[in-house]
Image (cartoon, rainbow, N blue to C red; front, side):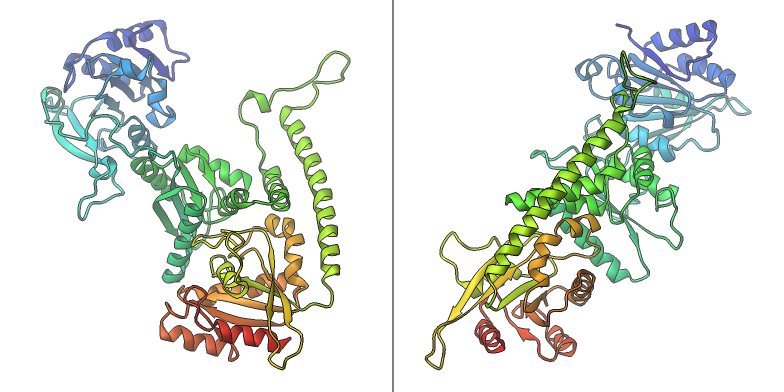
Length: 554
């Protein structure tokens, strides 16, 4: 195996130039620090002749492992291009670049991202030729403290590289800096030991700062509910969205840098993305990108416990992903065909789309049968008063159902402090003795799936069968969490979704968490609905009043 490889813009190189570059790549450099000055001067001559930047990757033993011809932003992940195993590279990789920009040596843009992926202990950058008087401009750069997992007070996190030394190339080649802890390769944040995704959030903010912060906090909650860890946020306030990615090029590049600094493995956006927008972002970020709708669909897929729930989630996922299906590699772009066929046949991508379309047709038929079954169940309940608990996700609907129905041990509905903890509609019979001595009174109370802002349309359509329990209820109890500062906006979202579903059942506001909310929230709830009912499902406050109202209203 060769000690070093030449990669980049190698097509069209004259054999003599290629031989000279290979000789430069075979020269050895000091093991622990610096570089061989004569090798760098020869590299500069070749860079000047080619009119291209040239970069060397030096391992801990002073051996050149890679010579990249052309801009580094076109190299992708340099670490994956090095020959041999990681053990053979050794610790403390160094990066040396002969730049075509004499006035701006500091790493910028995509080039800085490539450097972060490699995470060298030092990055020596110098100009193609010396200035008048023989001074050869050069700079030595190292990873900023934020890129080593430490944050300093007042640090500018937008600058991934910090200047270690500046001066003449000869002086920097001989400079022996004390590397200190954390400057070796591998100091960047890695995936969590549990294997959970590290997620960077990419958000578009509006003019209302508080509303934007609440929306970002909600997105963080969705990420945690999906089983991942949000590690950072990149936010941009935009008046005119860039059609190709929604975010400006500079902000996307900042997100790419932030993702490398924080060791993110996934980027989640707070806006829905079209297929081309997602591909454009993935190309620049060099990371998988999911939008908010896809994140919600993934949470639903994790939470679906019943066969009906899994059926509806799969249908929603396929409806969402079909227009976003794109070829990846030859397996999805190769033309199919064979003996006895006409023409080149069809691509594997077209076959996959047709297979998904057939699966969607099958699922739609199964959902229709599920709807017929649930309609028969509702028909058998005619003559009984039916109420439904509706509201924003994590407003306390399941806790309230458990508190009112008092189920036996093991029969309680799952109630956790997370978004979309339960998906399947659960119906419980609520009974009480008639105060006038008549037969016991009873009614049916249903807990439905929670709502959320901008609920993905494929999910609403797929879960319409489940939501029909809500549409046909005699009374809707709209539950809000008064301890959440955004409860007013959440209430508006719930009413908007119910109106969109065509619900005409009477609605009554049930204000939950009165033991944890500020007094002003109680006053605001009374203004929104003078007949609002105030309870605390966890503390047991106001439950008897709620039960009395439920049966008196019937």
